[in-house]
Structure formats: C-alpha cells, structure tokens
View 1: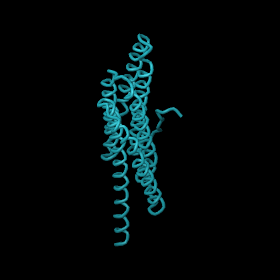
View 2 (view 1 turned 180 degrees about the vertical axis):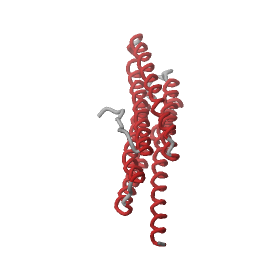
View 3 (view 1 turned 90 degrees about the vertical axis):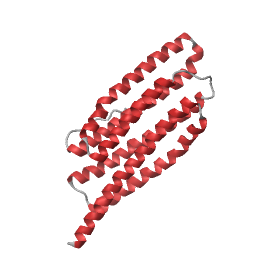
View 4 (view 1 turned 120 degrees about the vertical axis):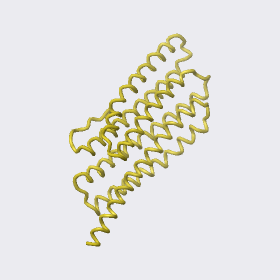
Length: 226
C-alpha cells in the first residue's frame, strides 16, 4: 500500500511538472512575440537579435517536455483523463515551438525594416500583437485551471485577430498604390501581420486541444494550412 501511494505521488508530481514545463514554454514564446514587436516600436535591433538567440531555449524545452511525456507513458501507463493530458501535451508543445519560430521570423523582418526609413504602421501591429498575446495567455490559463470557458474565449476571439490582419493588409495595399517607394517596407509589415495572425491560429489550436482534454469528446480541426 505504501509503495502504491509513493508511486501515485511520483505520478502526480510528473503531471504537475509537465504542466509547469508547458507553461514555461508558453511564457517564453509569449515574451518572444512581445519583444519582437517591441524591437520594431522602439527601433532596437539588439532586442530583435535577442529574440533570435532565445529560440534555442524554447527548442530545448520542447525536447525536455517530449522526454517527460515518453517517461510518463513508459513508466506510468496513464489512462482516461491523464492519458488525454499527456497526449495533448505532445501536441501543444509543437504549437508553442512554432510560435517561437514565428517570433524569430518577425525579428528578422524587423531587423530589415530598421535599415529603412521609419514607418508609421507599428501601432496597428502593436494592437494585433496584444490581441495575440491575450489569446495565448488565455489558452495557457485554460490549461492550468482546466477552464473550458477560457479556451472558448480564445476560439471566439480569433476572428478579431483575422479581421485586424485583413484591415492592415487593405490599408497597406492602398499605401503602396499611392507611392511605389513604400512597397518594400509595406510588404515587410504585411508579412509581420500575417505572422501574428498565424500565432493567433496556434493559440486557437492550443485552446481546442485543451477543450478536448477537458471534455474528452469532439474532434479538433486545425486552423493552419498544411
């Protein structure tokens, strides 16, 4: 009996550690997105370079989470709800790692933009970045508290991000038509907006996976093109 209790405590600790590691990954990815946009708004290439370097930390965390998931599978043989937690963790870390990759892509575009005359479109991107970070934070909150209402807020809020992306694209298109000299800068801003929209899609994917983890029913449809 004592051995079983000891094993159960170890198992519970591993599940808590798994959630904590995913949250740490999410925090790093969220900060990378925030800092990539801050590099643009403050005109600081040093921040963009830091974002690029921090991608290695996120990649290592993904490896550590994968290792822990395999360890839980091999030694604990989770069932039912716990099994959903571990299998969902496998998928969530992929989305978080890709968010880090997107932050790197944004930082690289920012470094290119900082070599050109300053543009006045960063405020719209700031708003979009804030919405994306809000959704990512909500999806992680849903994981911590097993709160399906928080996950639903993420799914419902994704349309707001999509709409803002379309608005930025249309207005920058007009800006390019008015002056061809604006084309190179505007294209980079369009790429950044599209990157942010994809982060929103990843946050939605995470929220949908958490809904499945909590409810144990339904199917999940990816918001990202293959």
